[in-house]
Amino acid sequence: MLLVTSNTSKQLLYVSFVGQVGPADIQSAKVQVSAQLANLAPGFQYLVDLTTLESMSLDCLTEMGSLMELLAQAGVRLVVRVIPDPAKDIGMNILTIFHYPQTVQVVTCENLAGAVRALGL
Image 1 (spheres, rainbow, N blue to C red):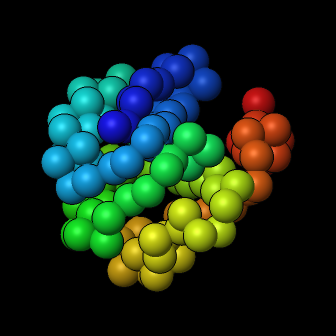
Image 2 (cartoon, rainbow, N blue to C red; image 1 turned 90 degrees about the vertical axis):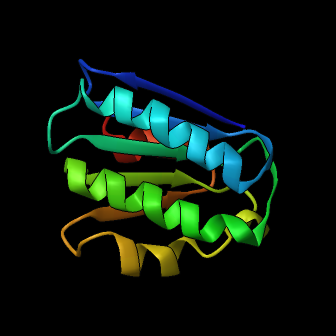
């Protein structure tokens, strides 16, 4: 499951990956992300939280790439990822190369406190 929310005053989109995630979870979340993007201006920040992720199947890669492209088209400026366990990273850095323009800054943190600092909140 993915939990999607945003804070318009901070121009922040937040997505938390929870439990076991499959392609259908990401497809469903893309609908929610699209709705949240309507309230965010280009230059928004995106916080990805994998703290409560148990596992993500490799067949999620295509959907993850599609989600990244949606965010890139909407004008994401900064992506901050919370990945406490490097084993949970299913190749985000490689996906970033193919699905985000070079103008998007990407930061990876081990915990949410580090992410908050990276976001300047």
